[in-house]
Image 1 (cartoon, rainbow, N blue to C red):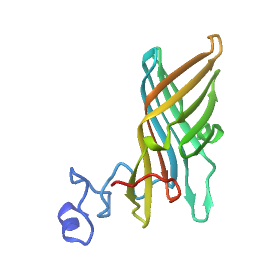
Image 2: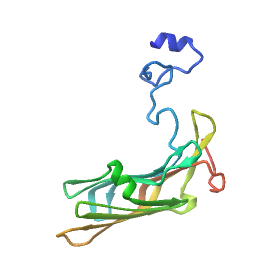
Image 3: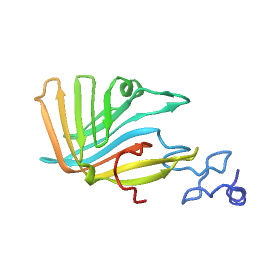
Image 4: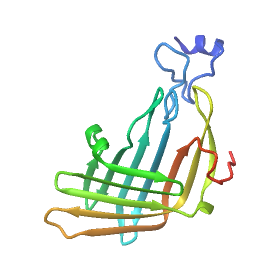
Length: 186
């Protein structure tokens, strides 16, 4: 379906650049046709004493009809000029990840390296953002840029390494639970 036909339809126009999914009037969005059912996500650009280290990670659960998938955790760590990828599908299923507002922990290992992480912030550091879910309903994104991340790296042939980023990790949890106590401001 072309852009003009979509603009004449009952659907909203495409994304800011005018892109549409093939064969539909649904705009291409960074989050697709619906939000992930439940997730924790974090990004840490620089750790105390390791300014060039970078971590991006997520634990997610999907709801497929009445069933929930197990938690799936992926992570990519850039450290000392290397990129450590713990992000394949089988890897995501083997990893151990759990989150409950306002904290999250995960551990993952592969090819002689093990990473364990704890991310947390006080409830007062979060803001709530309402996300309309395309199939219906509202999800709440509990978001902070002031979280603490503590990361431990165990690697064959190298000393144990611990990194921390105090009060400057981005951290969010997507939920449909109403009992988080965070004000939803947008």
